[in-house]
Length: 511
Ligand code: XMP
Image 1 (tube, rainbow, N blue to C red):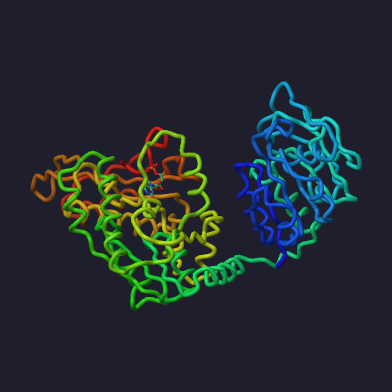
Image 2 (cartoon, rainbow, N blue to C red):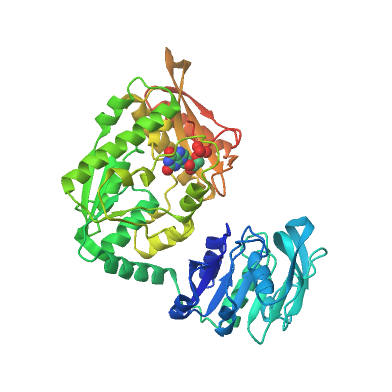
C-alpha cells in the first residue's frame, strides 16, 4: 500500500499533518525521527515529511538525521524545523533572528514550483519560527520569501527535496492543503486510493493479528469513541470481546436502553455484552453530596469499582480496549494546566484490571475521522453523531445533591429540549446543548395554585474545540416552545432559564 511517513521532530502538529495527508487519500504514519534508515527502507514510503519542532538545529542534542536519507530517492518535504534541518544537514546555514516571525504572514512564491501548482503568487501562510535559513545548501533554489524571511521555500528538484519555513497543515495557511496535495500526489506520485474504509479494514487485520485467540475487555460508554473502538474489535475478534456497559443512572433519557439495543444480545454485533445496572449504587454514594469536585470523584471512583468487579467475574483478560482519540493524547501530554474539573473517563481504568496490553485503535484519529470510521462500520447515525456527553453524566448537570427524582426531571426536560431542537432543524448547527437542573426553587402559579418548584437551565454553545465556546443565539420561538413544554410536561419544574454565558468565563457544563 502507498504510504507517506512523517518523521516527528517534536511538533505539536504532527498528527495534523498526518490528517491533511489522509485528506489527500494517502495513507500515512507518524514515526519518531530516530526510526533509522533501515526501517524506513523497509517501510518503502512514497514520500517523507519532516515535521517542525521546538529546537534549534545547531543546539547540542537537538534532533537530527543522517544525510543518507536524502540518497534513498524518496521525495522529502521539510516543514519549519524540518526545513532548517535539511539546510543544516546538507551544508546550508541556519541562523537565529533577533525577533521571531509568528502568525499569519503573506509570502510570495514561485508558482512554477511543483509544490506551488495552483497556489496564488502571493499567499497567506502561518509562520512560527525564530531560526531561519540564511544560506541554502548547494543544489537548492529559492522558491519563496516573506518580508522578513528571505528563504521561506526552497527546493532541489534533482534530488526531490522541498523545504518550507511555514506550516501548511494549519488552517491559517490558506492554500496549505493544496501544497500538501501537490507534494503527496504530484511530487511523490501517490495515486490517492486510500480511504477511511481502508483504515477500518487494515485496523481489523492488525487487531486480529495482535489479539490471536486472546481475551479482550472494553468499557463501553455508548459514546462515539468507545462505540467505534468496540465495533472494530467485534469485527476483528467477535466473541473474544466482552464489553462492559455501566449504567450509573446518570445517562440521558432512555440512553441505557438505546446502548443495549445496539450492542446487547438483540443488537447488531458479535460480542459479549454486559450491562451493569448500578443506578441505586451511584445514587447511594451521591446522597447528601453537593460539592462538584467531590461528586465527580465519587462517580469516577465508583465507576472504576463497578468495572473492576465485572472484570473479576470475567477472569484474566489479555487486552483492554480504550477509545482514546488523538486530542486525548495531546491533552494528557500537556498536563501542565490547572485542573478546572477532574475529567472522568475510561482513562482511569488501566490500574484496576489485570491485562497484558492496551489496544487503542483510534489513537491517531481526530473526532470527525472517528465518526467517518463509525459510518464505514455501519454504526447507527444517531450514535455516530452523538453530542459529547461527560463521563459523570447528569451528575454534573444537577447542581447540588443528586437524587433519583432530580435525575428524572433533568432527563425529561433534556429530552424535550433535544426533540424541539431537532424539530427546528438546528441540531446540526450547534456544538453542544442540554438541559441542566439548577438547585433553585422559586414561586410560580399553575391553574389557581401556588407552586414552589425547580428552575431548569437550558444551555447551547457553539465551539470548535470545546476549550472555548460561545453561547448560541437560539431562535426565540424555539426557546419559548421548549420552556412551555417543560413546565407543562415535567413535574417539579415551574421556570426555565437560558444560560447566555460563553466559556470562559463559564464552562460548558455547570459543574
Ligand atoms: P467544560 O464543562 O469543561 O466541558 O467546559 C468541556 C467539554 O468536556 C465535556 N466534559 C467531560 N467529558 N468527562 C468527559 O469525558 C468529564 O468529566 C467531562 N466534563 C466535561 C463537556 O461535556 C464538554 O463537551
